[in-house]
Amino acid sequence: MPIKITDLNYVYSAGTPFAKHALKNVDLYIEDGEFWGVIGHTGSGKSTLFSHLNALTRIQSGVIQVDEFTMTGNGGKKLKRKNRPDFKALRARVGMVFQYPEYQLFAESVEEDVAFGAKNIGIKGDELAERVENAIKMVGLDYEEVRSRSPFDLSGGQKRRVALAGVLAMHPKVLVLDEPTAGLDPRGKKEILDLITEIKAALCPTIIMISHNMDEVARYCDKIAVMADGELKLTATPKELFTQTGLLESLHIEMPQVTALACALASRGLDVSGAALTEDELVEEILRAKGVTA
Image (tube, rainbow, N blue to C red):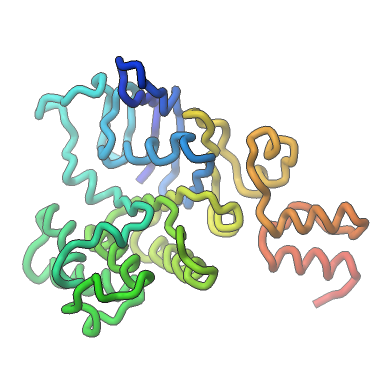
């Protein structure tokens, strides 16, 4: 399900002294099945850009195509019904998981909470029950153990999984995640990211992950979009981006820790490539430099 964004602009508080141009002439094409990372400093436009994909933010200027859905700008005004895309169907297709999604839980039981979104798009009866059970299992929770429990009695990590299950029960083909590992310890971060990889293979072919963590983006993403001051500065693969030291400095982007370590070792005379993005790649480089074969 490809996504095409053309000449997208957005201004907060337009026409007032507090107007802020949050997006400026953004063009982006995302192929079906890709895993994108989106990086940039706070206020760069990352979340505003991708909240347009399922019409949580309405287009003021520009065009967005998500598979068969086309959304066009109307100056931020409400479109007449006959000109509107089917937002309910669109939101079933594009799932959004916000930062700290556990704060959005509200129902009396886990089962009710996970069912809420799917119910809203018209799923009923046995199909609804099956989707809820499968979604809870997909996020690594024991369905029988948690189904009747209050989501507020769960641990922080379990709450986050329940919130994610609520989106998965709608069977989205695109999953947008805003800082999915925020506030988690290193083990929890790895578990969530590995889970996202499994979800990509099983249910949601296209993943878009907004992140401030360069190590996560370098390890998991196929391509990276760099945002700054409301503009899309460039798109690149992790290797293309994180091997350009001068570019990173100009955009105030940190290297992944592994890449920074590889560069530090190279500067001290060890013959290793500064293109290592993961621990495994760096170990291979060090062994090669030392003449050690596996």
